[in-house]
Length: 258
Image (cartoon, rainbow, N blue to C red):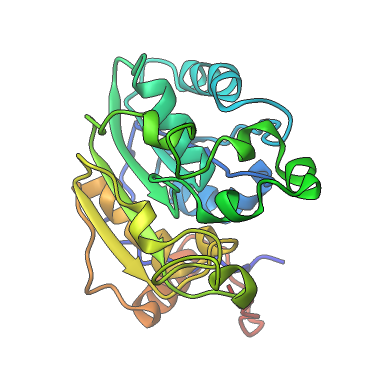
C-alpha cells in the first residue's frame, strides 16, 4: 500500500541533507516500530540507521555497548542525530556519559524514563515481570539502584517528548501524576535538556503519531520544539508532500489510528 500512515509536517524543503539519524527502539520492541519515522526522515534527505537489539536479553550497559557504536559507525563521517523511544533514551544517556560520537548532532527522546519507572518499583518483584522485561527492564526503577538515577545530567542537545494519554488505566493507577500508560510526564524530564513538550499520545505507539514525528523532525532541524504544530497540519502537509514525491495514487487515503 503506497499511501501508508506517514503523517508529519515537513517544515523545510528536503534539499540534499548529508546528516545521519539513528533510530533506537525501546524495551520489548523491535526496529520495525520506527519504519514510519524512517520513511519520513529519508524523504527529508537524511540517511537513517535503524538497528535492532535484544532489549530483553541483556543489561543496559551491554545493550548500549553492542548497539550504539555500531550504529554510529554505520553513519560514517556524517553528523549523527538520534531519535530514541523509551529505554532507548537510557541506552543513549548511559553510553554518552562514557563516550560520544565525534560529530554528534541533536537527540530526541520519546517517553524516556529519565527518572526511572514507577512500574518497575511496583511490579518488579513479580517473576513474570522480570521474564517479560529482562535484566535491562529490571534496571529501570526509580530508586538508588536504578540505572537512570545513577546517570549524570545530559551535556548534549536534547529534546524530550512526553505523552499524557494512557491506554492502560491499571498501570496508570500505579503512576503518580499525568502519564502515557507506562512513564510519568515528570519522569521524562532530565537536567540539562534543551526543550520538553507534552503531547496527547500513548507510550506504546507515540513514535507513529504524526504530531510526534513532526516535533521530532523540527527539533533535529531547529534545536527546539514548535508547539504550534497541530495534528491536522501534520496530516495534511504530509499527504501533499508525499503526493508530490509520487507516492500517491487515486485511491482515498486509508488512515490508521496511532
